[in-house]
Every structure is written in structure tokens, then in C-alpha cells.
Length: 160
Image (cartoon, rainbow, N blue to C red; front, side, top):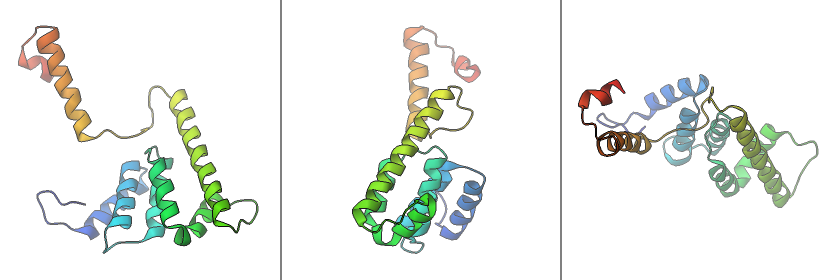
């Protein structure tokens, strides 16, 4: 979406992210949320909310962001939320619907926690790792090998 090293092409980004999201990639769904919520050319609050909801259901843990986005765009999103949640009774007041949304998010959090607890082998992605975290793991591995184990063979890291 940012177009590092190439010119930015939102249409191509959208096409590729939609394909990845359709295949079940939670991070792509989250990036579609960012696109539809922040890019003036693609701004669509309903699409953004639906993709954020999909991302959360796929394991991306941005519960608070969904809550803030829903409350900030309440007038546009209340019908979309009702479509997703399908409440058994008709709610009319904003506070009632926001409370129902909070309960929905708590349910999603509990489902996430219970699945994470049951699935210690992470058969399904439960979140995502940032580039900075991957870099930090590499730094820590090199520190462990060189300083703690006093081993400086460079090929060991490649083999590791």
C-alpha cells in the first residue's frame, strides 16, 4: 500500500489485498481496513469496519481499534453491526447499541483467548509479528551465540 521502491498503486494494492483476505489472511484484511479508513481515494467506513471485523475474527488483535472506529462512525456503522451481530431484539438507542458492540468485542476477546489456550501449537495464526520483532529475535540470537555461548562461527547462524 505504501509503495516502497515503486510508485503507489492503490488499485493494485486493493486487488492483491482482497485476494489475500479472501484466502483467510488476517493481516491483509487489516490492511484493507487501513486503506478504506484512511485513504481519501478509497474511503468507505462500512467496508473498513467489515474488514477490521474479519481481521479480528482471523486472529488480528485490534479490539480497541474496532471499538474506537465503531463509536467514531456510529451513524454509518450501526446497520452494518446489526447485520453482523443479528441481535434478537430491536435496539434503538445509541447507548444500547454501543453496549451491545462492547459485549460483542468482549465475546471476540474471550473466543480468541480460549482458542489461544487450546491451541498451543498455533495451527492457525493468532496474530502477527512485526519486522522490528523479527529483527530483535535475530539480534538476541546473535547475542546469545556470541556473548553467552562464546561461539563466533558465522555459519552457525546460517545453519541455525
